[in-house]
Amino acid sequence: MNLEEIKHIAVIGAGNMGHQIAALCAIHGYRTLCMDTDEGVLEKAENFFTSYLDKQVKKGRLNAEQSQEAADNLQFTPDLEKAVGTADFVIEAVVEILDAKRELFSKIDKLAPKHAILTTNSSYIVSSKIADATSRQEKVCNMHFFNPALVMKLVEIVKGDHVSDETADLVFQLSEKIGKMPVVLKREVEGFLINRIVRVIRHEAYWLHEMGIASIEDIDKACVYGLGHPMGPFKLNDLTGLDLSYIQAMEKFKRTGNPVDLPYTSLVEKYTQGKYGRKTGEGWYKYQSD
View 1 (cartoon, rainbow, N blue to C red):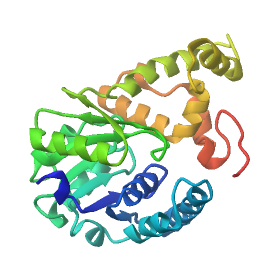
View 2 (cartoon, rainbow, N blue to C red; view 1 turned 90 degrees about the vertical axis):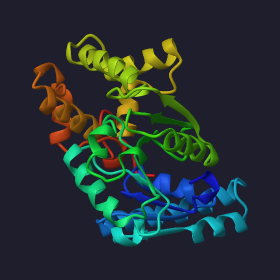
View 3 (cartoon, helix red, strand yellow; view 1 turned 180 degrees about the vertical axis):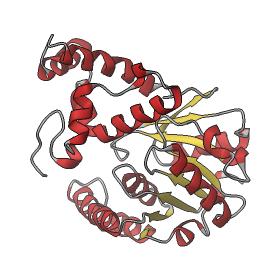
View 4 (cartoon, helix red, strand yellow; view 1 turned 180 degrees about the horizontal axis):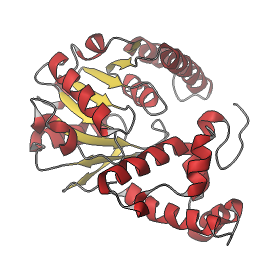
């Protein structure tokens, strides 16, 4: 299969990342189905897409015809078979739990055409831990977008030993086609490039906060005005989701059994209180609804 043969993209998961990835594909001309089992999440995703297109037209970034074409390209569905049944390319964006991803990929493998490439948007889990749940291991690859996916340019592509050159090349080409800047990891490593770097910064930020050395606000200011980062580690954590950070830490602890991998106490407190960041209106900071 070559890039021109990719006509239909399925995005599985309509949450914070999934619905933006689906919108991105639709805007760039791909017939896209966005699937989620939660009807409420699907409704919210569809409302976001309609509102986003209207804003892009008002800002002059899309004209009315382009907006309508994008709207026509994207459908939302709770039916997995409908979503992937004719897909040439699948992007999974569900919860960061390995067992859940393996079960999902096994189902997709049975429903999707044999030529379809299956990618995961996982930010930590390498695809070799998922691929053997399918009959097409050479077509299973990491394709990690960054939040917000409609804005952030980077896509990390991880070429594990099981991934064919053709698959990695097609994922790279598709990333460019939808306006992204792809980078390729030649070997699998947990957390890939950016999250490994960010994890070290966030670890130090949590420690500085919990030791009472500096406030959350001042730690963020230091990173913005001293390092030139667009936002500090706590505001970034609010954007990506404290629930995601908690789940990733717990999943790693389950694998290693090392107490060092457990989430920091302050993160656990926020998680148990349901304060996940921007998505809930409060995390490390409080937010007014937009």
